[in-house]
Image (cartoon, rainbow, N blue to C red; front, top):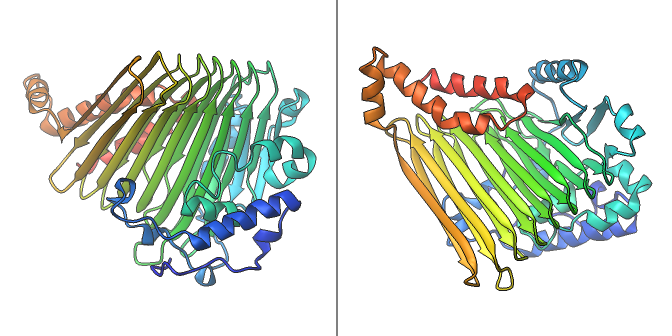
Length: 437
């Protein structure tokens, strides 16, 4: 990591030369955008609470990747879920260097494509060229341009028209240890009247607080075509000294449904951007978030629902629980364009502070450019309700157990929306955090 914001991407590096001509042009355009774009100003509301210098990197100091030994345990667990029939397929991605797929034979027989991006560029170039860089590109931001230039390899999924995948596809992405740098990229296209559930899990990273951090800069582009049904679940559980940046954008077409669930537990410093664009009548998006911070973790989350078309609906419910000295900043924007009439949009952010020393900022934003809408938002920041604690204690429950019960009730609704094979692990992460309050 490096706090010198003058670091540039060199003219000639291996990543820029990967792929056919059109892809090289995209990579070089991203490089040029990154090099000419200054770091975001701290005066911008999306960077008010997080120093962008902490996301700059010096590739010359990056080391060869080594990985956390605990990775194998999670991989074995998910392979067992696959064997038991709880998953449709599993993909493992070690820093964009080694990507493996398990259980995809039945899917490919249905015309489903799940492969590395590099392979998809060769075998499905029309699809990839049509969608790659369309939502996250050199115009999206400086750090998005960095990913656009330097991603080594990624994952591509295409679900054909009228195909339903009943069980989730699980993507297990592992970051390297201290001083490692990785740029995971994901492109998903869900065809007309198709259905997909995908779990996008990010683990690994720098473990030792006394060592240099690891750096992960990810990009996700997700397209839900007409009448499709997509469920995207992101789990971020990186190690205590990891630095994590992710930009996710989804485009939802006519009468399509998009469910986005973000689960954040790990890392020292994380900035997540989740956005859904409602592009045609009948498009619907529901977004749920659960963040549980402890120690001195710093989380910065931004959500976006942009209604480009009328007769679209959206809902955001983002919950935060903080203990020790953890910090969270949440900014949620609903934008309804002037031609997007008869829309409904709701946004809620609840922050639970479990002790003194925690800090939560919440900034709900509405940009409504016409009057024919139903739109509302709400936000709260505060400690556990003492009246609830008193009621439980009066029934013979200890103060500590009462607080744990209230917190579990606070997060349970979101956990219940996660696929069943993942619910137990999420509950374990919550329980581990509650043991120290």
